[in-house]
Image (tube, rainbow, N blue to C red; front, side, top):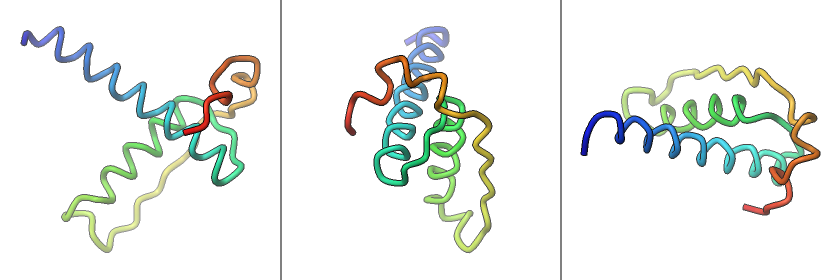
Length: 79
């Protein structure tokens, strides 16, 4: 697989994971955030699972609100 295709697939995977994280945060915590917040939290969650981050503090800033996505289908799907 060439590097360009791998890069494209990785971006798609990150976007899909970000959407899932946003939906779960809304469903289970009642917090509406946007896609970049989902990406931030998703990456932090993955880091927290790594052995080298055991007993470390990971700070995540959720940089956007989900308000602009209320008119889209983002929050219609239940994870």
